[in-house]
Length: 301
Image (cartoon, rainbow, N blue to C red):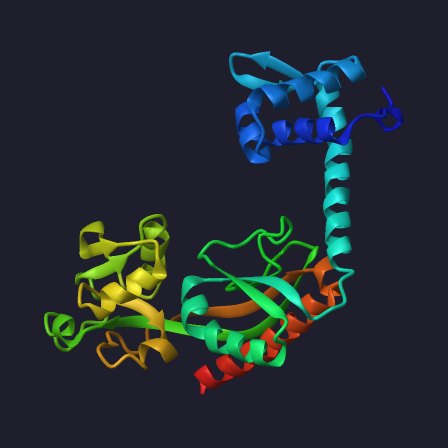
C-alpha cells in the first residue's frame, strides 16, 4: 500500500506512533495523558481506516506487523515535522520578554546561577526565568527546557552548543574526619567514611578507582542522589564528599582530603537550533555564555 496516499487523522496517527514507541497501550496512554480505552479506540479506528492490522496482539503484548513497520517510518517523520513546526513557531517571537526555562545541575543552579540570573533580570526585566534544577539531562527536543547547562557535549544534530569553560572538583571533609585518617595520607586510600550516590554509585566508584582511590561498598557511610544533600552531609561531618574546587575551597568548615586528585570536564551551554531563532532565547543564551565564561575563567585562576 502507498501510505503517502492515505489521508487519516493526526490524533490517530500519534496514538499509533506512541503505542509503537512505548510498546504497550497502557504505557502509551500514560505518555499521552489519555485513558487506555480511548487510545485503543484511536488505534483501532486507524487500522479500520487503513483496512489493515498494524499490531499483532499476543501473550507478549503488542508487536508491529509488517504493515505497521512500513507505516511507522512515515508517521515518525510526521511527528518530527510537527515538533519542528512547534519549535519554529516558538522561534518567531521577537520580544525580549516572557518566560524562559533554563536547566542545570543542582550545584550549578544553587551556587552559580542565582547571581547571574539577578544580573540578567536587571538588564532584561521582562524576562521571567524558570530554573530547572536536575542532575539529569533535560530533553530539549521535547521542550523540557529552552537552554541547558551540561557537563558533556551533545551529539544530537539539531542541538547547538557552546563551550563556556571547564570545572575541577575534589574531595572535602571536616577536620575531625581527616583526623581519623592515616597521616601522612597514603597514595591509595582504601578506607574512610565516604558519601556516595544511590543510583550511580558504581560509576562513581569506577571514576574514583581511575584516580587510585579504590573503595568497597562498606566504605560508603551515606548515599543520596541529591548533590546538594551530598554536600550538606559533607559539611555536617558525616563523611568525605565532593565539590567543585572554587566552591569547596570557599567553605571554611571543610578541607581538601587529597592533593593532586581532581575530577573535571567541560561545561557546555546548549539550546535547540530552532529556538536560537527566538530573540529572547538567543539573547539569554548569549548572556549566559558570557557570564559563565567569565565565571569559569575566574575559577581556573
